[in-house]
Image 1 (cartoon, rainbow, N blue to C red):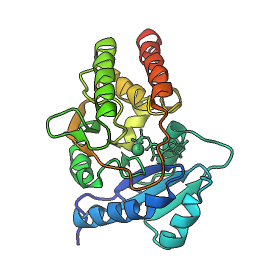
Image 2 (tube, rainbow, N blue to C red):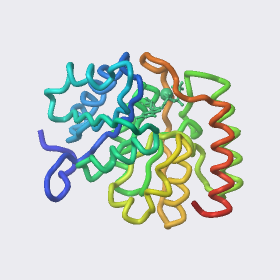
Image 3 (cartoon, helix red, strand yellow):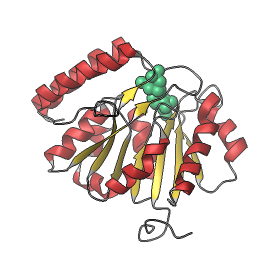
Image 4 (cartoon, rainbow, N blue to C red):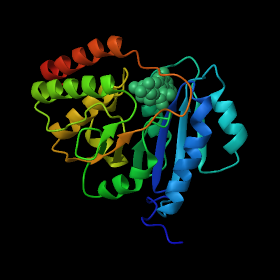
Length: 246
Ligand SMILES: Nc1nc2c(ncn2[C@@H]2O[C@H](COP(=O)(O)OP(=O)(O)OP(=O)(O)O)[C@@H](O)[C@H]2O)c(=O)[nH]1
Ligand SMILES: [Mg+2]
């Protein structure tokens, strides 16, 4: 079958799906298999780049045991370093695709939207899988849904961004976008990296498209998000961005 999009110059797959993992042993194999199947179904030439922070539950070893022979699955284990945003940056550095898709590795983000997001990334700088546009939503928690909704209103007002879901973390963009941004000032902390990423993109004149997505239940394991603790961190990040631009 002919791939829907050509591989980038110099070879490698067209699309790299970056998955940061921490203690996701229970669901990671199922999710990676799902992503590969979605890719095949859409004739997308893709690789999956897993960045695991030496998860104590053996996420990386388990994935390697089941899918390690598949050249489309690449697993990087970081030792002595932890953090969602820095893991994503590492995944982007390891990625060989011209288009990058960043997804949660617990199954919250539905890979079914990814092919459409990849195609839209030809015309937009960043495509966001959004809970807060028509057709989007969150099956997991009503409280989290409305708390994030309220936070997003605040972020829109303070930052002047016309984006409904700044915290989604389900993002597709062309790798070349990063040449126009300042990755070290974006990829630190936790989910707030996504606010900085979108803010810098828009400040550079980039165009952002939101595609509806419905968050699913995680496939196993436990949440790493300490919502109340992160809420204050995210709030501080929004005001810091407004005041310093970083
Ligand atoms: N590599 C790496 N991945 C992480 C780290 N912390 C979280 N993650 C991953 O980041 C993603 C988001 O974390 P979650 O715990 O699912 O956060 P959430 O989606 O806000 O919370 P839930 O709604 O409870 O799932 C998951 O895929 C985690 O495995 C980390 O320190 N390092
Ligand atoms: Mg999650």
